[in-house]
Image (tube, rainbow, N blue to C red; front, side):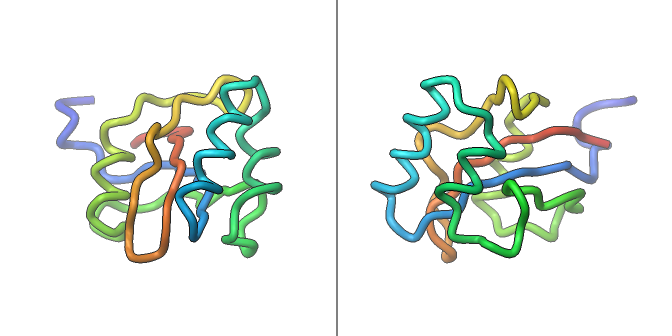
Length: 103
């Protein structure tokens, strides 16, 4: 692969909370060693997504702050997630984001 600018899609998971305090609680669970997908099922208000899995998202299809955060994160796993801390604020609420793949 060439430079990072050649990347055009991210395999993303997130935990979406309306209130920042709830997103911060989710981060505390992650810091305590909980798996990302387990915490997403408990805390995320995006109930349509199992374990916070958004699948592959193309660059340009995500809201600005969410995309910038996803682009900056390294690839990680639900067992040992690297995630946004503090949560990322968008018009939808507060997101805790992790990236499982880039292509």
